[in-house]
Amino acid sequence: MMNLKKFLPVLSLSLLPADPLAAHNPTWTDGIACIIYSHCTSCHNPKGIAPFSLATYNDVYQNRYAVAASVQAGSMPPFPPSQKKQRYAHANTLSNHEVKEIADWVNNFAPLGDANAIPTPPAYNSGYSLSNPDKVLKIPTYTVNTTKDLYRCFVLPLNNNSAQFIRQIEVVPGSRDIVHHALIFQDTSGKPLSLDNADPLPGYTAFGGTGSSSSVLITGYTPGQGLFEYPQGFGARVNAKSYIIIQIHYPGGISNRKDSTQVRIKYGTGTPRNISTAPILNHSVSLKNGPLSIPPNVVKTFYAEYKINVNVTVTGVFPHMHLIGRSIKAYFLSPSRDTTWLVDVPQWDFHWQGFYSFRKPILVPAGSTLYGEATYDNTVNNPNNPNSPPITVNQGEGTADEMFLVYFNYTGYVPGDTNIIIDTASHLAHHASCFNTSGNEELYTDEITLAPNPVRDCLTVRGLEGNFNACLYSGEGRVVLQRNMSGAVPLDVSALPAGVYYLRIQSANIGVRYVKVQKE
Ligand code: HEC
Image (cartoon, rainbow, N blue to C red):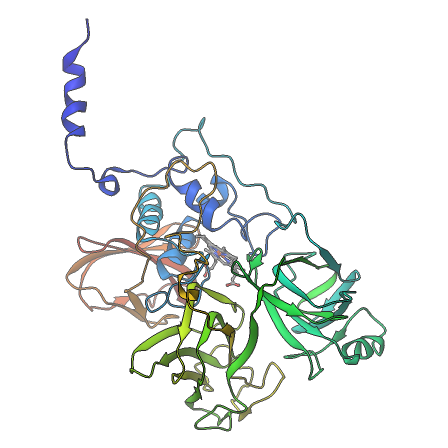
C-alpha cells in the first residue's frame, strides 16, 4: 500500500507559490557549471585568451572568491557598454539570477553536487564556426618577439575579379593567448603591399590605421568574439581586386611565439544592401571644442556633433579612444527632440574594445543630430597613463597619442528596417548540456563600491545602509578579519600585509556580496 504520509509534505510544498530563486541551493552540477560554460569558458579554457582556466570544478573552486567578486563587480564577462540605455545583439552578460547563484554557491562552500551528473564541458579547440567559407585568408607564420605592444599589419589578396558582399566574417587567431585584438581593412591601392615588401619579415608595423589613406575598415575582432554576421539582406561591399589587411595587436612581453591567424569569409548571395563602416563622429571634423589636445594633470571632455540630412539605418557602433580615455558615449536627438542612446561606455578600457550591433536596426531620421562625448584623464590617478609625470597628449596614431572616434555601421533607410531582428533573444544562448536555464533575465547591475580601493588604512562601503557583516578573506581563502558593521563606518585594514583580499559583505538587504580589495 502506498505510504501517503510520506507523500504529504511533498504535495503541500508543491502547492506553495513557485519561487525557484529562494528554493535553489546551487551546486557545481546543478547551476554553476552551466553558467560558467555558457559565459566564461570561451576565454577561460586551457587554450583560451584568459590568464587561467575555469573549465573544471577544481579550477573554479580554487578561484571562487575572485570569480564571485568579478561577476558582482560587473567586470566579467567583459562587456564594457552599459545596457541600461541601449541593448546589444549577442551580448555576453549575466542576469541578476546568475550572479546571485554564483555568490550563493561561493557563500555555501561551493559544493560539487551530484558527481555522476556533471554537465559535459564545451569542446575547446582553436577551431572556428564558419565551416563553409568562400575565402580563407591566412597570414604567413609570424614569430612574435616583442617587449612592447606590437601592431602588425598583414596584407592578403582577396583575388576577387568582381565586387562582392561579405555576409559573415570570422577572425580565427593562430594563438589565442597572444592575439589581443585585430582590425580588418580593405584596400585596392598598392600602398599596404609596398609597406609589406619594404619589411623583411611577414607584414609590417603600423599603429592606428594601416599606413594607407585609402584603407577602409570592415570590422574588428576582440577575444571571445566568434563570427561577425551582417543582418539578413545586408553585407560589407569589397571592391574588385581588393586586399584584406589584418592588423593584429600582440601585447608586450611575448618571446618566440608563432602566430598564423586566419580570416574566414562567406559572401552574401543576391544583391545585399551595403553596410558602410565609418567614424562619423571623429576628432578631425566633428569636434566642437577641438583640437583634441589634453594638457597634463587635467580631466577633459570633448564634444562632437554631426547633422544627419537623410534617413539612415544604423546597425551597430564601435567607439574608439586610446590609453588615457576614461569614458565615451554617443546618442542622437531626432527633429522632434527625442533622445536615443547608441552607446555609453562608462569605464573605457583600451584592451576591451568591440563592434556592438543593436538588437534591431535603428532609424536616425533626417534632421537628427548625432552627439558624442569623450572624457580623457591625463592625471596621475589614471593607472593607464603612459606618461609619468603626465605630459600634453595630442591627437595622433601612436598608442600614447589620443583619438576620439565613433564608427557607425550604417546604410540608407528603407521602410521596414527597424523590424529586422539582428538578435532579440533575452539572453545569450546557453551551453547545450545545461540543466538550469531558468531565472529572470534582468541584467545585473552593480551598486556597491569600496573606497578607497587600493586601500592603505581604512575601507568604507558605499551604497549600503543599515547593519551588515564584513568578512575579509586572504587571496588563499583564509578569514583574516570579521566584523559586524553599520552604514559608512570604516573598516581598519592598516595592519594587514599588502596583497589581494576578498571582502564578503552580508546583509538582509543585499544578501551576499564579494568585492576584490587591493591592500597597499
Ligand atoms: C571575452 C573573454 C572572457 C570572458 C568571456 C570571460 N573572461 Fe574573465 N578574463 C579574461 C581576460 C583576458 C582576463 C585577464 C584580465 C583582463 O584582460 O581583463 C580575465 C580575468 C578574469 C579574472 C581575474 C580578474 C580579477 O580582477 O581578479 C576573473 C576572476 C575572471 N576573469 C572571471 C571570469 C568569469 C567568472 C567569467 C564568466 C562569468 C569570465 N571571466 C568571462 C577574459 C574573459
